[in-house]
Image 1 (cartoon, one colour):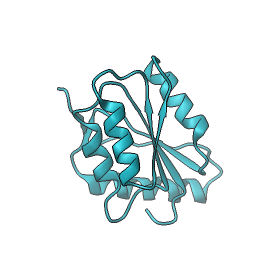
Image 2 (cartoon, one colour):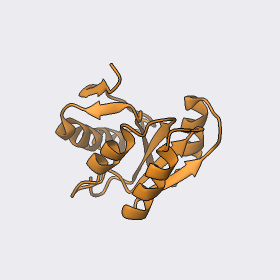
Image 3 (cartoon, one colour):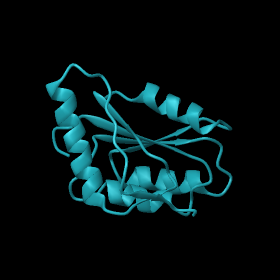
Image 4 (tube, one colour):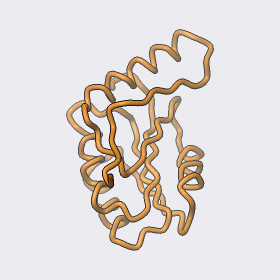
Length: 132
């Protein structure tokens, strides 16, 4: 979304089956964020190579390798490395059922946060676990 200074943090570990599709969706004609951080927590299946290829293809994608880590650790490292006003957390194993909900939802959250003194907001819906 233009005007939404947001980093999308995506912790990942052994996500070669889903990460490329997720990044391609997030970097469409109207990217939702100014930066996407792919934080690898010790993948052994080629996920890091795919992520590095995506970073070479998309200027707004960066990869951080943290070694063996729990998802929460990788997420926190990504948050700490974010330089934007807002951070959106996504799981690498999710697929968007209706991508317009994600884009519209981010815009609505930004409006709420800009119009109030709140420091955090959240929403859920429109995703499914790719492994179920």
